[in-house]
Length: 504
Ligand code: MV4
Image (cartoon, rainbow, N blue to C red):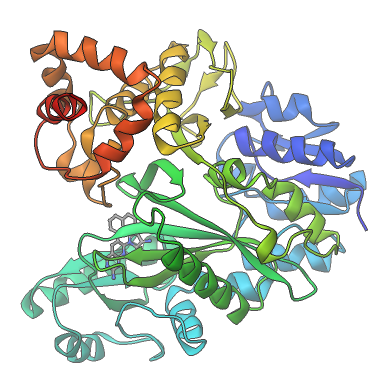
């Protein structure tokens, strides 16, 4: 049993994990790169050790050095956070070999889900629906892929076996273009993952990306904490997540079915600790296993906010060999939560990364608002790590109230020194498609333009003002219901006028 935890990560997630450990009465050890000497995670931990220069390869990815530090300072466990070493089966195994508890699943579960083709075959065997494809056929050569493709039908996707996150993915519309695209996918997969193997899947068009949070202990108990809607992405980077999914809505049957299937998928790899099962959900509410992430996810706070469960604390308890404190029937969801990822990037300039010193920062607080961050005034945003400044999460009794809170919180948020995507989130909170909950994974890239939305506002300043006042009004609760029905592809302002008339 361990009493001291080393956090093998940086930034907001390292801070989040330190907080959970402190509340559990455990000592904490931070590790950091030369670029992170002044970071919050270093200040909040009981002890901190330098790993090396800024590049991840020379710091946060140095698994042997991290394990060495843990042993020398008497930490009995390592929490990997997300990214870096979180989904490296060899690292989880090396921890065990060194007599350390890896706060996460077993190495075999990580490896089994890390190979996306193997993961599909494994869960399909356990009775989980996967998108029709080449699962269970082993590594396929070009000739075999070309032979199978017409049977699957087009359009289809070439995906990297070692992949995930869209890397090495290619969409194919005709057999003729397939050889070139297979070669390109293999090349990208080889350079990203050192594994050029690919497999095929039929395309699910206009799908939503909905994922289920899982908790499983070492005693064979496994439960789910409901879903998160993650369809708002750009180039496979999530920008905003919410729970519950407005698409699932009050379809409890669909929610329970997805939850049960996710637990089934987790059990198929003998899963322990926190994990997430991703699904594609089509317009007919059919859902298909996409992949399983064998780690704590960035967007876990929205699930925490609607269930009241501290997922990181549960991870630590599970790693200490405790039974889950909850059975499935104990899990209750209340209200709605939204998380906006606040990134140092310029939404007016194609989301270009924005580096430099944050000269001033004032984060929102108040009822129903949570900010997870690792930065502060004078913090330098460098190009070495991901550009996330913070996760701004809000809770409301209804989705409408959560949206109003998000608007208020975004307005309060002041960040000077770097560009941020706060204006993106602000226009999203005005987007009638978002308000109506009618968005899929193509929304940001294909249907959204911050410039066009802001022009709309200039054209109708008086309506914009009226709307701002009205939505702040208590009766805005009603609006979400109106907005969810009869939504049409008209401008926000036409839609708003119609809503006004309906309110009469
Ligand atoms: C798909 C798909 C449609 N059909 N698979 C993208 C990242 C990787 N995790 C899988 N991805 C997709 N796989 C089939 N059979 C559409 C996507 C996809 C997507 C998925 C989730 C969130 C955002 C996305 C954006 C574009 C494409």
